[in-house]
Image (cartoon, rainbow, N blue to C red; front, top):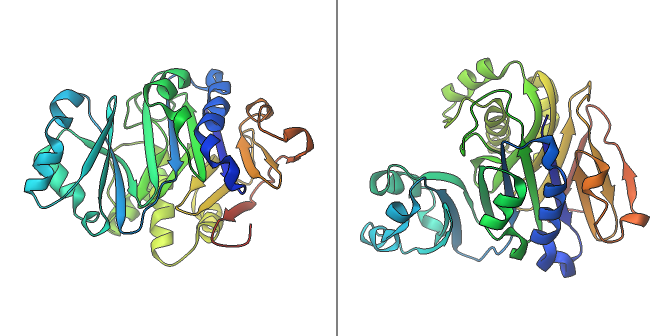
Length: 301
């Protein structure tokens, strides 16, 4: 049992409140998973720039002097430290090689996510503590997803927490368990994907990344997941401009959605949505089994 939430804003006037709204939604789901929690926020994209969120078990050692060390390797980076995480603001043309540079400079640092707009913060502990540690409430953005975990498939670690990000500006949160993740992992490795954990949810994220790399949009990739992934799952997925939801054909994991002219929201339970503005007049429904729901800021919502 895990708790997942998501919020896709249509109304730009709500963007300064994204972190606040999403934090409250996630904290409401605390009793669905006390092991670890995480949030992905999409926002603040700048032309020609990229962001890389990194994590360290020893941030004093790994983050001190990191900007200077990166500069010596030809990467001009602004480093913003938030507790055990830091966000690197780098030139977009340095993004493809940044993992190798970081591995050489700070081998114990792990990349949580990267892209033009996404920042991902996740740690072991309760949602309220994770939200406070990373000052998520103050963050603005266009959309975001969150997860609080009750571990079933792997150890309780920072890397095992959700969201999982396996591609630029892509991430996934998952409630459920996959039965064919080991076979699918081997197929994806043969296709060139790499993995940092044994978590089945990371395999789901990598599957979507691989499908989108073939030219599919998020909605098309989620449609393919219904045929290719076995098990019980509810996925909420973010891309740079998109937000998607899908449940497996049995749909035994709880889910509820709400839509107004201002936003689309997802929660494992309705109580995650009750404090959203205008919820009393929202269209509220339970997403259908084996049905893809997909919104994109770059397409008609």
